Image (cartoon, rainbow, N blue to C red):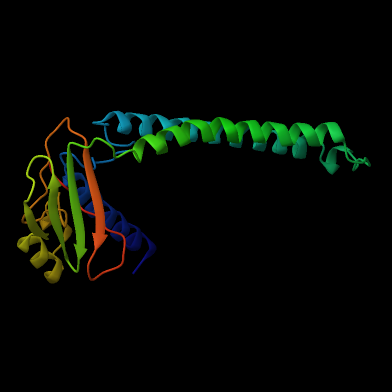
Length: 214
């Protein structure tokens, strides 16, 4: 195969991938196509987490730009090719104090808002509803312990059609947008209520993930 033929084949393959990706639509309440940011927050805690995310990101970017700008400027300005020679000097107490205090203040400035959001997120007092979610192999169990729906218990497993697609290894074009996210009995909770979720496991020990719907 010639080089031109190889390039053409690669371009066709890339076009097919782009076409398949373009066919995917936004998932209501979930990821959006080409999404670069967090989902729109629906709760006060969500808003604070989104703010904290951007605060930390911008702080780290500013530090990165400042530190590497000074470093690359120093390397370029004092390079050997323009006649600069290595300096001979001893440590400076003043400099050491400054570069210890400044990072300390930065860490405190980042830790205070992070701690505030973390403590608020872990506050489960006065919950309107408490649900116990138990992880099983390939399914989840839910028990409504108090609040609306007290006494309701059920198992939630992956939707049969999605399991069949997974077993058959279907192509990307035939998979729905909520592939491997749809279950037969989704968790339902009321809006504008504080919901406490207790997570545990029965016969598995691994990270538990599910997509409840409200």
